[in-house]
Amino acid sequence: MNSKLVVADPIKCTGCGECQTVCSLSQCGVSNPALSRIRIVNRQHEGLYIPVSCQQCEDAPCMAVCPKEAIYRDQLFNRVMINYDRCISCRMCISACPFGAMGFDSKAQKIFKCNLCDGNPQCVNFCYPKSLSYVEPERIPYSRLRYFASTYIGIRRSRNALLQGQ
Image (cartoon, rainbow, N blue to C red; front, side):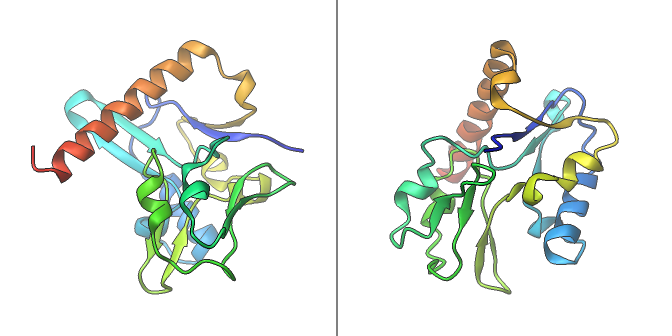
C-alpha cells in the first residue's frame, strides 16, 4: 500500500499559483483556482505563501463527521476519498477539516478534495520552485513537521478570529 503525502515547503513557494492551475485543469478540465484541490494561503505580511492540500489524516475528522459514511480511506494509496454515490453535499466535512483543505463546487453541487492524482500529483510535477514534494510521512523530519504544524495552526487561528469578527 502506497502511503504518501503532498508536502509543501512554504519557504520555497513563490505564490505563483501554477499548482492551482494544473490541479484544476487535471481534475476539472478548466483553469479555475477555486476548483483546485490545493490552494495557496497568502501571508504576504510575513513573506509566506503556504500551499495547503489534504493531509490524508490518519484519524480524518472529515470522515468522522460524514452522516452518510461517504468519506473513506482507499486501500491502494491509503488516501481519504469521497464516494459521490453516497455523498449528500451537506458540507460537514468541509467544516471539520482542520486544514481547510476541502472545497465545494457550487456548479456541480459536489464536495471536493485532493485525491493525489492517483499517485501522480500534478501539482508536484509542475511546481517549478520545487516547494511541493510527494513523500512518505515517515521521511519528513520531525522539526519540519513541527514548523509546518505551527504555521497551519496560526492560519486556522487567524481564520477563526476573522470569522468571529475579532
